[in-house]
Image (cartoon, rainbow, N blue to C red):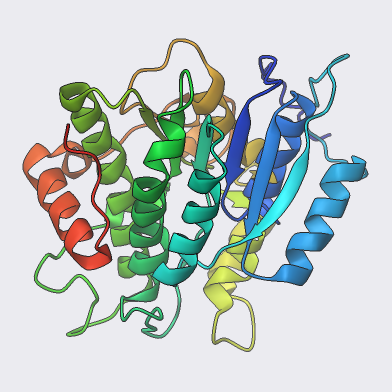
Length: 323
């Protein structure tokens, strides 16, 4: 029998959340729980068709999972879909301009979308290696451009999705886009390490500059999502054998609903601190209830974090507030 995860979300009525990649997988489950708690949710999708389909399911409440919905008697929030391609900085700018321009606060930003283990070196529209460009640079630019909307909120939070695979990541500042040698998992690990370094550097800058925006990170363990099934297969005729085998091993994987819990916990728990990182608490952090997650020393290097921030600003042309 499947476990029924049940972290109680607070009443989020009147709060606005943006979930990148909210049309499927972890993002969809995150949006579903936020809606049940009363939040007004914007989900992003590269595909208009998939985005509309997800929005219809979320709006009707028709989608059911093994996870417990703890909305109680609350009024469900509203949901809408917005176009976003994180591999295109123009798309990032257009969405951010729309949200900042409407004058409303943004309470919660979930940097959730991603691509994983692309088998052949592929570039974004802006010439970045696809995984680094999408998973890190796209979210870096989006967060920076959304700062005015975030700072309008009373207690805004940014939750960035990392991965247990950040442990195998190295930031090669001489070859960020893997021009000399490309390894699919190495590039993925670099992007996920960058996500965690971004979270911690954001927290340091928030503390010194007084932005008033809490920066946190999470990882989903090994969750059965479209990222596991589709992401690694970009350019492949068949699914990865390793992924197929792992998905069939009992106790080694969990549902997308369960995988979404760490980022929901980070976004709503009253006791979290800037820079905290959460993931499943079970064996190897693959499954289980949310708790503090382990991270490499590289992830908290102030020198490396500051350098990554500088390079990210240079590459994206997006600069965060300096006062």
